[in-house]
Length: 368
Image (tube, rainbow, N blue to C red):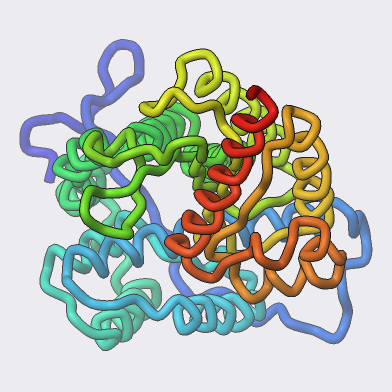
């Protein structure tokens, strides 16, 4: 084991390759009892919550990676139940917290493990090793341990996913890179927490600043699509068609209000294809699955603001049953006009065109 003298210390007392050293024999003692550690309860609860979150994130992350590699569907509930039972049993023996291990899972997968029986065999092998075979590993190099883990974990580096995220969504790519770098330089716990926190910030950002699209009619159809994505889509004379791709609630109301105001000003300054100013605003509410009280107040105020902006009318299209029920409870359907709330977008546009034509006639008569 020491033929080349690599384990012998040099003049500074350091050896080239460090052995594992003595590994204590035996299994952990049974430590469960009727008492509870009531000292420093606040800190213990805080640590428990942190450990639980880290364990869940780490376990689900490696489980998803294994499921993607081996082409099977992950049962998250079953995974968490297994972790809970394992931690309850392990706590009775003062064991380290049970979680999905990146390194051991990768090694298991690399040797061809396919069922939980592999973990059972691994557990029995570790138990036998702890009871009788620990002296064998006394002179084993620590480098060997590192090499086994490195070879196993290398399979988890999904470089194609890096390029895939860059092509598909730059924000997802950013979360991936930040999480990877923080895990690499600050540790798994901080890295997972950073990734989760950044993901939550992106969710908040996307809901607070929803995508709002101006719509136009595809030639020869009654289908309305974004004019930015479909250049051939035709804006309707005197009608501004908008679609809000998020629920209407307190966090994004001001952004929607500002967009509507700016869109009307742009159409007024540039003019649409017919040269008519905006006389009717149509909101396509198909993506709006829910609306809160602030959203109802927003629609109420929007009706007044549009009327103040030269008598512009508001028409709603594709409201869901939940949104429609909220409008009725607030009696806002009466203020908007029940004829101005349509199930189909095509009907909403027909209604808007009728209102715009009537306003144009009134303006023509008044001008004459």
